[in-house]
Length: 301
Image 1 (cartoon, one colour):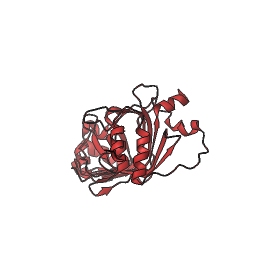
Image 2: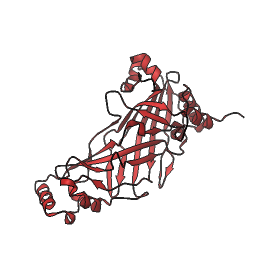
Image 3: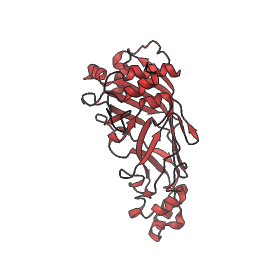
Image 4: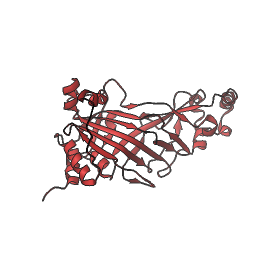
């Protein structure tokens, strides 16, 4: 029986052979997502420069990837919603699982000389909107009142990778075909200002927020695969204007907020944490790039 492009893509995404990119193009064309690339004025070095942080000399790296979010992205935990105005960058190498429960996934390999999930500080709701003063101790109340009186209530929030890069999983077939988990992104969320201190987190390495993002439907949200362009004889892919969503993850209670965690209960009460599945949502819109590690190594190795 002739294998369909859908089946070919799912199989190749888990194999170590260099058929992944060609299979992606085939399935994308079948699904109506493929757009022929326009004539490129850039030379190969310019096109592949974005993969400069790929660990292409690592023999385990079969592919290189960079994903960059756009301004429509946001993250919500409990009653707190953070708009990701700055690009959220995910980068590194990819290693195919040959078998087992993750055989259709590509495992991330840490970026070379940079963060795999690049941390950026976003504007968070001010202190008054994330803290319930009535639940603070006397000493924490004094600190809180001082912060408010001095107008030191601006917060920042940062999404950080929770755990090693290998905990990130990318399923290219699901990404293209808008079905199932496309990207498993385990994160922790840092809230920071002078009152909260430097170690105030939602989630941790031991208990991450596992966001199983999909280009299909998750709860009340529906994503999209975007438009795929194949460049350089199948060696360089651009998936533009994709939208990955999740409306089914749980968000844990905060920890480490204030002096010795003295503000934890006050934040949980105000933000609505811990928050069960279905009460939290993430939307990551942007562009994903994928290239052969072999080709990147030829150019820059």
